[in-house]
Image (cartoon, rainbow over all chains, first blue to last red; front, side, top):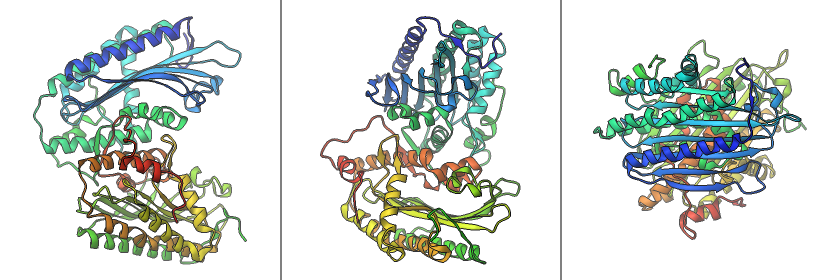
Length: 314
Length: 314
């Protein structure tokens, strides 16, 4: 069996197949959101101008100002570059500087109601061609949930849906990827997790091309079931200025994570990616205030003490 | 004459002298702000808990929710660390990994009225002790202005005040530091300057200790004259929802710069600095929206076409 960091050769037509899957996934997810929200997404097809370092195209879809979703971005992108960045080759020195091709779907939904959690999902494939070699490829992905007010049943449902999606690919996958998610979505400068986690994996090809692709697809396909029922059961809960203020404050953590720690955001912005597409993840409205400390025993305090802690949710 | 990157030995008592200057500067600036705003600053004395990587203390001062200033943070900090980070020793390989001491005053003021520009100022001293050697030190600092709606006379006044402050230290200083500021406060991912600039310098010791310290002090001392008259003449201008929305949108650029590009913020957050003090620079309320394009000919468009361009303001 191949080592976890080995990549596999992409069969002929793989790029086309994966692209078809990803654009289809994007369409299905945005359709599900519009069905709930009643607001269509703006659909922006873009192509990187010739002459830029990264070449490629994408479909940025965004819904702003809806009754359920204050800002929901869901982007597909497909780019090629002359050389893999160091951050992508730390486990693959043989690919350092190789030409690469990357495609993925990435989404972040910021709901209006503070009782509805923010959610992130991403699935992606990378392919690289080492000098004198055949193209090799690997997969990454995951999803994670960031509540403002915690509900145990939401966190449990989200994690169980992730676990069920991964089960056909081996019982080890969910626990490994759950832990990886907890480690990745962590604000070191706050010593605080971003939310209640979910699953995260990267550099994945250990099941061979077909099954690794199938696993990535299973995660993408599980998104609507993992998240939309949570949004549905919380979106009508009444809330007031206090809950709204806490939501805006906590959204600041999302900004801090994505701009300070997220490798994808950072690499994208620094390497010439399309800023407006990368920054789909930014919340519509955010606040910062000095040294906010929730009152002990309050619902806001419970977020920190009961939800932003490592837990076995599934 | 020493080369620009050479550092100088700190005379006996220098740390104490510089600290006295900096805490005094912080007091004078916050007093000037309170005199205008009518709101006192919250004053938070902090000490890093024993056992952390960085040791030290500071005085964080912050005013939130004032009639003129929606969030105005002005921090003094004085820390020591076991080894200089690589980002601080790129021009000084002989100091790589040396124990260091750093102190400074840093401020960012976010006014409520969109016609009043946001401003940033920082003055700092670093001292390091190479293995087997004497402590050496150097200075850095600067200030820069970020309008939402541009006024030529404001940019001119700000730059001329900076130029006058630096004039006693050589005619080359203002043009050098103005250009350095333009280069530093630039959002590469937007291909856009942060604002109309000002002055910025780092690694400075070429005038010897006394005069380099005097130059840093001249910049700090000029802040109140450079900025407060601008705030005074704009703070009563009437504005509406449109101007407020544009201000919140443009504040997003401030967040993007500080969290993605600013070396000080990044280093501080990643190295164990005090998050709440480092993030004093964050705006109180910020918005993001997709692909905002101001209407040609509008006041918002003029910000981009006439102010966020390289200009000789002084």
